[in-house]
Length: 367
Image 1 (cartoon, rainbow, N blue to C red):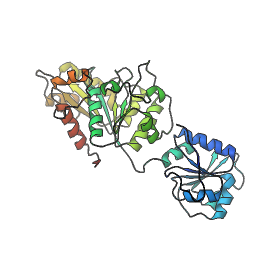
Image 2: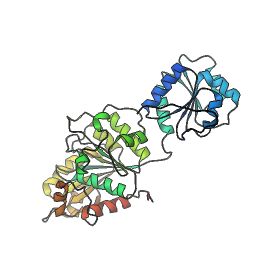
Image 3: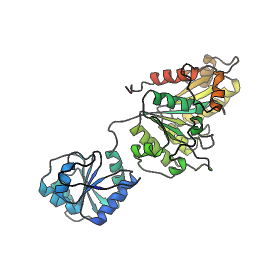
Image 4: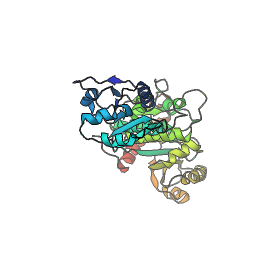
């Protein structure tokens, strides 16, 4: 998403929430706009101290070009945090003196500090103090129902009013957007983010992804799956943590580097285990891989229609606490084939489990 500079006119308020750039150096301005675009951040631009005055105190970040440092200092603007002096290298001998005279909280020299400035742009436009829980979900064996549980948890959270991000980390799965009936929804998929690294704006991420109410979904398209780098997973999850109330990640059973990055960032990881002997044996192998990346794994025992293993046997065999049981829900498979999203039956076992688990997790009440 490109940055859209909006000139600030004297006596006129600009749109709040945008960083303010103050420079008359066109080459520096081009660099600043390029870096703001890399952070998916829109900015306001002022070419003189008088034009900057209306936004000086309200902009989340003020970037003053080295060419305007003395003029701004002479104008005597009120003291405020979040002021950066930015120049291009090599820095002039009096660069740091200008920083002090301006009362800036820091000074950056381009191009060496480009990555840091991108991060500062992104940080300035995001909510302060936001920190979402990250729930990873994987199956103890193929067909355990991990994707269904992931989608149901995310839908339940969004239905309760939380901003929620659902991430499909399984490139060989069927696409979690299909479970939601959103496979044709416009928006970005993993191939658009697979090579991404560095900071991603949470607002831009949510705007780019297919959405279902307050739920944003990052899944795969129908092409050959792209290889997602760990840096891309880190950037996406970090944006989700900063900008959402809950992040749910549907994991593959065999962790690739990107999935391992997700597990490292999980608040808790759910291991869905059918109540069968072979499923428990398979789950021990998945569990071994999970334990290399996280210390909080909980089992979800999925019951079949016939008799199966009881909770005590599974808990003892796996050596992890039980997050709960999912009783058999005969109508669920048919509902999914019809395109109904999982957990739609609010009285069903899946929906009840999701509500109870989210409540036990201690998530903030969105109301």
